[in-house]
Amino acid sequence: MKRAIIITLVLVGIMGVLAYGTMRNLYSKIYKGNQSSQQVRKERDILTVLLMGYGGGAHEGTYLTDSMIVARIDLKRNTVALISIPRDIWVKVPTKTNESFYRKINAVYQLGLFPKDYPNVKYPKSGEPGPALVKQVVGEMLGIDVHYYLTVDFEGFREAIDTLGGVTVNVQKTFDDYEYPIEGKEADLCGREDQFVQIEKYLNPASPEATDEEKMEFLKDKPELAEFLKQITDDPVLAFPCRYEHIHFDKGPVLMDGETALKYVRSRHSLDDGGDFGRAARQQQFIEGVKDQVLQVNFVSKIVPLMDKLSTHISTDMPADDMQLLINEFPQISQYTRKQLVLSTDNVLESSYSPDGQYILITAEGINNWQPLHTFIEKALTPPSPTYAPASQ
Image 1: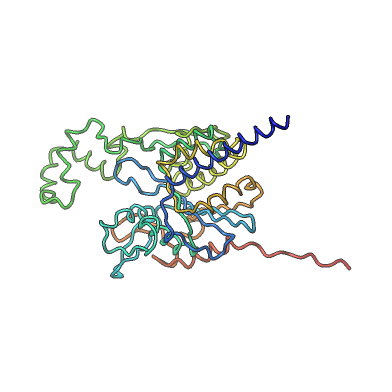
Image 2 (image 1 turned 60 degrees about the vertical axis):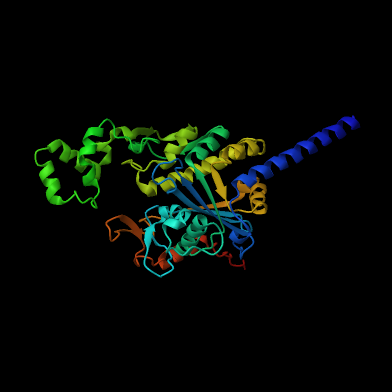
């Protein structure tokens, strides 16, 4: 009996060493940081991670961050704060010449990945340009230190959810989205190639042949082409309906596989639950569902296959010791107090338009004035003061 126990312990030990070696190998594939990219955490009990999801693939806007959530984990107070960042927030990107250069927040990560295309951008001295730049810009906007980043593309997201066996989400309201983009069909002309060729030059204002006079003359007796051109600029869904699909979700608990979950967290064109703010709330709700699912399944047995599938779809600069710290802490996550913040026009943001006519979000104090946002975040993250009952007489 004793011999059997010893043999069992030896086998478990060997399996543990192999698993450790496998994890180290997998971690080396997703780790994109270095010693200089690691921010010193002033408060050792607090970890702040910028979570970003992007499309991937080879289409235009591959690295635009469709989802941005800052997770702030306080290991001492056992609290987790999730701050959803709308993609239309208008931010100032630092430049070497101090020239004013603004972009929507969802473009900063992609911008930083191609420094040769933006030689005047002032990138942080340490870390990879893309992650380092977006961490700096987000940190300055929120008024907090952003220690690490973690990105995942859509394919990685789908595979992660499927590896977990799906996630059950309690959908808060029934909604339809008739304009959900079909992956891979972003440039499909939906059988209107001949018409598109005739008007293509008028879609580029810089074209020498695209003068207003020439366009009016060309379209004078071509009402169908004129309407097609108008649709392309004003309502692409009408111009290219094959690029979009109708998705529907019923109120109540829904078990979602990876593909369904991706549609749920990306949808933003529903009249019932649309826009970036509704989407942000759904994303935070979905994270709760993932947490519940991970606590229910034998997650330890799924770590290796999960990381194996994600190794080509995920990247981070979080050092191994901090990642191990979070993995060790995860079983206690149900005991953590969770705060969910969705930055929106219902609290601290206001709708506006950029000089070139883009819809943007700013604070009440104006472009690049983040003090109201800092105050809002600080108040939300500050734990309430303890109250004391008066001593009985």
